[in-house]
Length: 99
Image 1: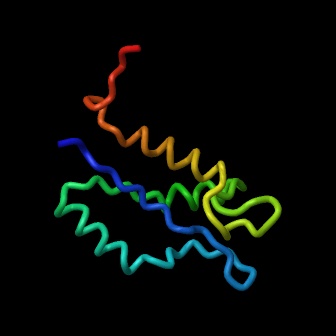
Image 2: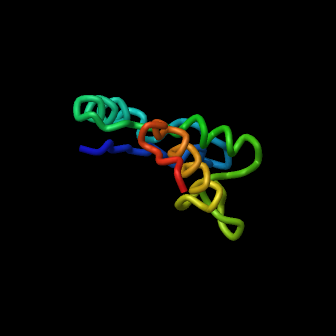
Image 3: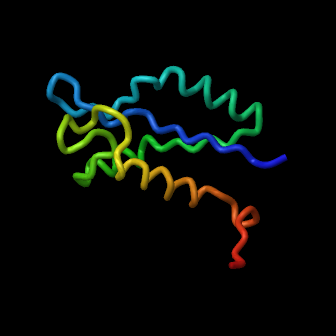
């Protein structure tokens, strides 16, 4: 009876052969995922543009200072972005403003 949200945050951008790629390696599966979410009333939040935008400003959402940016799992920057976008996607009627 409660809403379900799915955050789509693939590893973009990433580095391939020393060059930055913003192409989602799972873009073909995304349309199927989108269709399934729509048919089952799951709210799909596509974060690809936000991830690319964050990296374009010099703050990579994946990877760490002791490895390769764009590789590995989300770092603190990526998790912060996901949390911020998730909170912005929640309809006001679902959020209690009383504290």
